[in-house]
Image 1 (cartoon, rainbow, N blue to C red):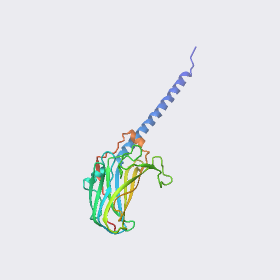
Image 2: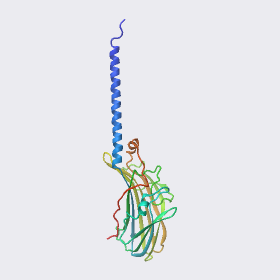
Image 3: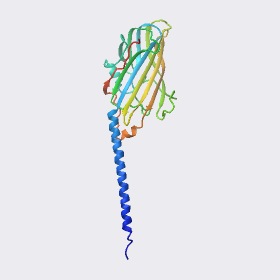
Image 4: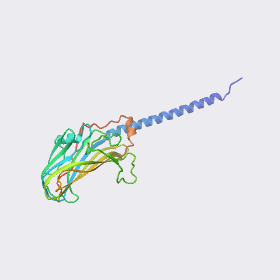
Length: 277
C-alpha cells in the first residue's frame, strides 16, 4: 500500500518555515549585536567626563586683610583629581591679587585664599574661583554605590525630598542628601559686614550616540560669615545624584563599560573668573 503522497510535501514546507524563522532570528541577532557594538564604540569615542568646581564670594561692603579657608572636592577614600590639579599649582582661576595655597591634614583638605582687600561686590556679580578637570570616564553619577568627589567628604549626609524638580523630568534615579559643611573667614571691616560663599561641584558625563546626551550629579553648599562673628562657620549643603540620561548604560555594559579613574588626568581647562566690574 502506498504511503501518503502529501507527507513529503508537508515536511518540506515545515523545513522551509523552520529555516526561514532561523534566518530571521540570525538576522535580528546580528542587527542587535551590530547596534550594540556601534553604540558602545560611539559612546566611548564621544564620551567627555568633567568635574567643575566653582566658588562665588560676595561681600556687601569693603573688607581687608582677608584670609579664607574653603572646602575643596574630596572623597572619603581614594584620590581626588581636583586636589591633584590644585596641588600642581595650575588651572585654578582666581581674581587678580589673590593667592591660593592648598592645605591638608590626614582627614581633610582646605584651600587657603589670601588678599589685601575685597571691595564690595555689585549685586549679582560676585568674585569667582573655578577649576575644570577632564578625566577618563565615565564618572559615577548615580546614588547606588556613589563614592564620588563631594565638597564635604567627611560630613554625614541624610536623605531628603528633592526640591524644585521640573515637571516632566524623570525622578527614577534622582536622589537628594542634605549635609552641613564649613568654611573659615578672617578679615578687617565693619561688624555689620557680611561675606557669603556659594560652593558648587558638578561631575558630568556627556556623549553623542544618535544625538547629544549626558548625566551628572551636583553638590552645593552655602556659608555666610559676618564681621562680628569671624572664624569657622557652618552652612547647609545638598548633594543631588542621578540627573540625566541612564538609558545607554545597558548597551554600553555589553561592550565593556569602564569606571572613571580618579588618578588619571587627561586635560584641564580653567574657567573664567576674576574681579567683578
